[in-house]
Image (cartoon, rainbow, N blue to C red; front, side):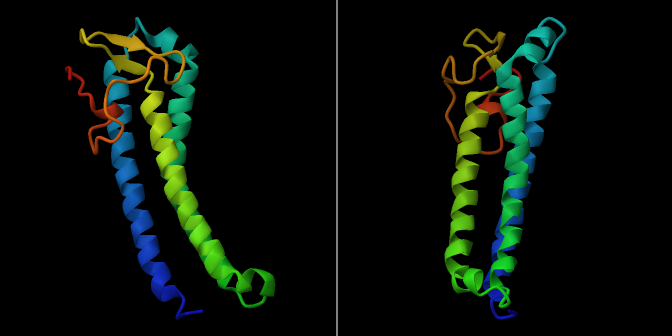
Length: 152
């Protein structure tokens, strides 16, 4: 069991780095959301399904990498069926975290509830992905699909 943890510890470190990146992005996104929120769009935001999907995806993006912590269960020699497929299950969980993280990033990108238009006005998005965001999908560390609070 201890020899198998040699490769598991770097995997947990990578998961923690991903969590910190997601935490930073979530902090920036929520900060921009609060900055863009005003009394005039408060009711629209509270009724928007896009807002609920946005916050659900943001929360899941923070929790998803912790699934990697389930992997040591597969290396328990008492359960022969799971132990015989331990590497398959481990790779499947890592792939699930990577693919799930990508899908959550796409959901966050497409469901930003307070989008900024070309005229620098802030609009409430009611239906996720409609209209399709004009910003690039992966803009690291800028929050809310890369747009600043003061324009493009």
